[in-house]
Length: 284
Length: 335
Image (cartoon, rainbow over all chains, first blue to last red; front, top):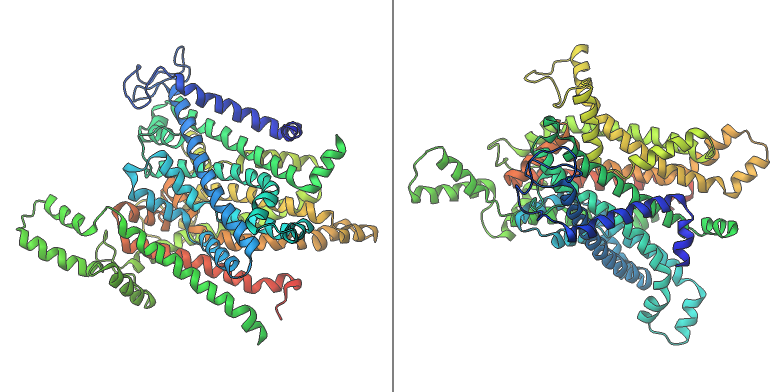
């Protein structure tokens, strides 16, 4: 809690956090939606924003506000899955590579280098095309998670490398702790903030990727997400027909979401940087 | 000699290993796609109203499989693929049969290469200069304004930025053409007038790429410069009375450039991934559009060709930068 209090002192974090809370609140609202987002023609079509349709309706006869609540919920859940999966992989790879060193390190770093170098985007698009219609939301999250860990594994590894040289490692080793116990009991607390900061960056990447895949038309377009909302509106030529509320709703929401996530992650990583932290403590 | 054995050789081994892993992945993934190019071709013929008896279809399937290099087990295909690849032959495109893949790539490569090379290098230079100055003079007013703009533009997905620019500068204020690489139906012959048309078509895609690129470099460079600025040797130089301009140029920016050079190599490699979205949004005739069509028609050979090219480009540019690094950083001279 103290950490949150310290972070909230930063204007950027406060802004990002509030926007994020509002969006999270929106996604909770989806559980109370009067409309089913998968059904068409439930409300009059193409209405501009007016009561009771505060963000208007689209050409498929759906209420945009309530559809947005589902879209935000799904996008957030998907990105959370992607983020968590890739965090787990990055943690395991980074910790083993950093702690074991030697051959294990070389092999694992070669693997992560390959992932950095291969045109991942092309491969993700390929796989998404392959399983297009059957690609459920958790599966998409899993797919993005499997491909999004390489860089963060490197970051975690370098952190473990520096932890390994600290005195407490030797103390623990000499007093008979097992390697596994050292890594999980002693190192993990140091790594958790770092993992959290990279998690947010990764979530933002996953949401962006989902939007891109939806625009290319290679994700499952029936599931409401920020990307598919945009894709449907562009597909129906909403811009040319002047239905600006349909296009702008997902665009503006995602811009806010990206800025919020970005500010949160910048603020956290600045907070983690010891030099900055000393300055902050000095002020308090 | 020691340099070759200790550094160059392991580096080259990794280089080839990475290429092998990448190409192998790209070989196997499309082969699990549900789209069967042979069946598609026959369906197209049948749809055109040609009558064929089952036996003829079977024979044709065999012939086509042989032509497309889909004969035999996966393993045999894989071996054959490498044999042809080493000769620089990717086989014919399925979709635009019988044009060789290499020819299609050659047609679209100049469009992408020019657009992306120019924008990547330009945004790198602009971003680093701005970022370097902003990091050093971090309390000035213009720095704060740039910072605020960067906060908004940086996290935006590229697609949304590109779409926004297109709406603004092609629909609402129609200064630039909506899409295409050149006036429709014209052959390019060199003249100043034609060059102007070419530039006009490339302007919007270039602008969108530069906008995003500049701010990415800007932020990275600013961070590095801020940390270099507080190094002891900078303080010492200041105390020694060296003029500020010289400190910024020779002491701070020069040292901060190093990670940025690595970044340039990585981003040069990502060119093709970036090209995909740019070229689709602005309907620009390049590798990205080619790739997009290849994905949707299940054109393995074309896919393989483009992705292989991309892998080769990335790995080679990283290798080159790694080997050239000692030129920029005397601390890592290999001995």
